[in-house]
Image 1 (cartoon, rainbow, N blue to C red):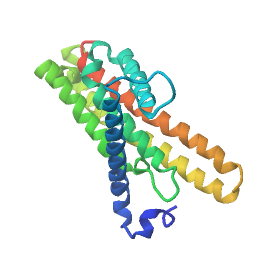
Image 2: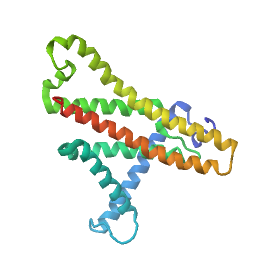
Image 3: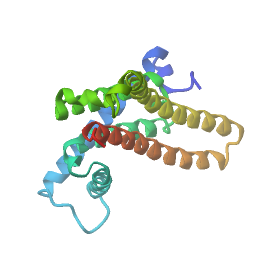
Length: 227
């Protein structure tokens, strides 16, 4: 599908396209957050109960996600909800950007997703070390000391496999969905594009949700290493 997006028209090198697209997402998210904040302040922090507004929708989404995170992280949720909700909305906006004609989804690029997965990996290990100190590394040694020589390489591999799992899952689903949309849209111009647009919206939300959920689980595991 390369050669048919806005970045080609303004002659941005292919290797920079995902990075520029990610910067566009950051900019759009920042503007949206600023507008919502201004609107929220104008109402003195009160969410209107009558009518459907952008502030009410955003508040509802955040509260819904926050409640879900509480079901995973329990008392720890307030400490990590901002990080996890931020991940969710960045991935969601990135996925949705790819549905706009002329743009590409940053999350269809493995390098972008790998960077996010590495960030999550470093973050939850940092949380574990901060919470448990050096005792955190006992999780890599297994339940009994005489199995440490076997459990250590297995645990290290499993932890690094989380990076690939997060990045490959997101890349495969988003790039595959956009590829299929392009193929079928070029073959059948009526009806099919609308169907794939709906599936694209569903995939965009679902993949953002899955990435956030797995990240929350990894954080929980780093906090409760005794379990």
